[in-house]
Length: 245
Ligand code: HPA
Image (tube, rainbow, N blue to C red; front, side):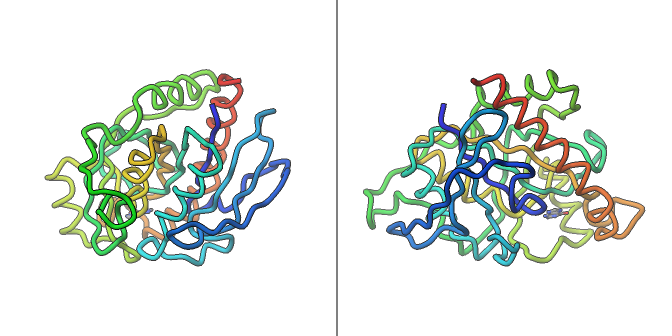
């Protein structure tokens, strides 16, 4: 298994990683968000990419998802563990905890969302019934259990355009749609990974209650919860890598 980790908001670098090399990669789709970092984590070599750039400067709708996934596939990775900060509707996970979504709904627009558009590669219609790889999700859930980290094992990730957060009415609509986790970055990333034949799963860092659903202002939630969610996510991934050796 050759693992790539895509770090999202709050995980722009891997804490304590032993860096082996950094590669600046040019793809037919342009440049990835940041240099790809080869690092040793839990005695395993992985590639790490910071989705929003090294200084968290790339907004969700401006990320070059195609370049990111193409670079990862080109490095020989077959597995992607994506870390994504999300807001939560409901109480399946406490703020500061983790969830592993098993489904998603894409509300984004205007993003370059496929390789298979008849341009560089011939037109095809990806079977995306299951957007996240089942075996990888099960391995991550087991890794959480082994490390004593509570993880909600299902969830519907609604991918919004951002960069602004939602209105209260938008959250109500998302809830009616069945969304439980709201974030801005799982699409088109998950579909592109699928098109490239990579096993892809999302570890969602629950960093706030969705707009209108919490007691505290959203940004207070974010500041208070990120350290806990980041710690648990990185411990879960370390446990996963140890079990996959
Ligand atoms: N909505 C959308 N994206 C997010 C949120 C949210 O509440 N929290 C973190 N990313």
